[in-house]
Amino acid sequence: MELHPLLNGARNFRAVLPYGTADGRRLRADFLFRSGELSRLDEADLPVLEGLNVRLVCDLRSSGEQSAYPTRWPGAAPRQLMLPGQARDDAGPMAIFQVISAHEGERGATLAMDRLYRRKPLIFAPVLRVLAGDIIAGGALPLLVHSGKDRTGFMVAMLLAMLGVSRDDIMADYALTARFFPPVEEIPQTISWARESYGHVLTAIQVKPLVEARPEYLAASFAEIEGTYGGMDAYISQHIGLDETAIANLREALLTQ
Image (cartoon, rainbow, N blue to C red):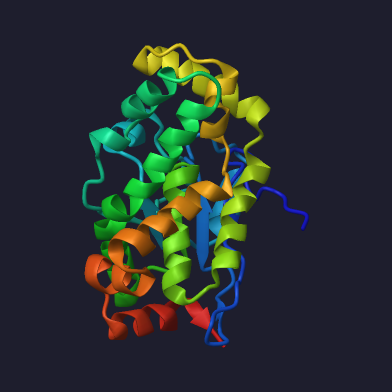
């Protein structure tokens, strides 16, 4: 599959592909977009973004990240979803860099990423509840979910799971991110970020797993859902808080025959 970025200033801005679902329906084309942060859009990007007619933005970044890297939008920005707090000290950058610093080679980063993705089902259940409710209420589509590769990747994966998309397609969508984040560019930026913002001096080998979208990362989230929450259906109903009617309405909004 040959893929090209939609926007010059946001390499991983893309429409989620119209994957099929277990009940024979399909995700509506150009109804769900995903991206990293959008502070570096150029003039050519703005009319492209405007033409997508995004009606709701789910920005998963912290308030500090939003202030430091404000989203650039053509004209009046669409509605912004107000989300419950997601901060967890044991899953933040400082904790991750501490784990990485304590190990040589890739070991620290792979441990940190496994821990991070196993935390996500707990951290993002309230966020998923709010987002799903907003979609069901109407006026939220097309929708953009954005932050960085990990938060966005998990959120989109859970949305696709709630819609009945197969695990193979969910993993394939997550893996597409790797095509737009070449380690040769991401590694130096991450090393500088760790040093300047958190005082950790790391090597390229140490941070390489941090910038990659490895399938085992998202698989750790699914394993946590199976082992701790009793499977996807129980996670959706008991922890996200969506009953069968809500799921049916969510699918009606995002799927087509």
